[in-house]
Image: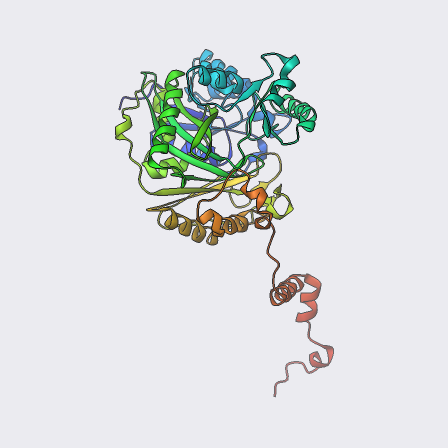
Length: 493
């Protein structure tokens, strides 16, 4: 491979993805700089990078969204390229243009591709116009005055979505058409608040759908390949919790069709770099959902079964190199599962939790990968997304991967704030998950999974004793020598 046109990479992100990008970049011989807000002091990415570019903002999120400050930091530290990771500025076409205007390399798709595929309404029209499958839908832009009538004409249930949305924010499932107007108003308000864009569209909601996505990669020389599909049906509030590949439900023929459809969409868009084409699947049919013009959180499962490094591919493609592989060169081996470890209480409605990381022990063993974004002593706050780490496992088959995942969860120690580790184990142990019989609403239909099991009377008694002995006053009383015995002095019988 040719030498890269830059020797320093700035990572404009935080947490586990920042550390993950730094590791690949350093292996490639690049000097690394990580942009960091003060709220992330103590994070392992800061120790792993060659330099830290401190950024400021009213909040941590505001700092990571400050494109001018990040570009200035890249220049100050001599970086020739910027990798945005996922979230924050990763799908911001204005930022991508500003990076290029500053004479730097943006490690991601072109601004034109982000504009086209990052706007859900434009993307759906683009895909539909080229004959790819989309669910029946209506967009507000076409004729705002008739939007509600056109939405009702689709028939329920409906899914209301902001055009510029992501991460499930602003999405509404409407089964009672009498509530459509109020749900549309709420979705518009959330879209404006989260994305600065209140435009909406609705689509026919497929009951108990499965969420299938396909990893694609394109270069500047016209080559586009797919690296297989991932199933992301286990979700809460439209946020993924478990991802796996291959999907346990697709037949060989369905897998070929959905993957080639994804690659076809990317080719039609002249797509470059990493992207993910997402579909809703049900009863043998699938519909285009959206395209994420960035690296996905769940990319490690694809890496585990294909033996590729998607971040390295991203960097080389951004530098102008060709992919160097054809579709026939990509092989898939075994089964991989990713579990997102969150600082949250599943029993309290998946609410975020806080605290200082008192102890962290990573799991190990064959086929186990642990991408963490925190270190011992680091304070966990609600300033950012509550994801702390990703546990990724690989095995020759799905049953082995599940067994390895459960063993790895049992060997993971993360103390100091409540996490969802025990919940993830209960999820993996559920017969429906073992059988691959899940859908995007499955967790909502299984509330018992989120509830903490009630300990037995014997366990409660032991916990009470431990708590009592951990209290200084009770421990002092227990250790005290009664006055009568103390009067004996050093005498022994």
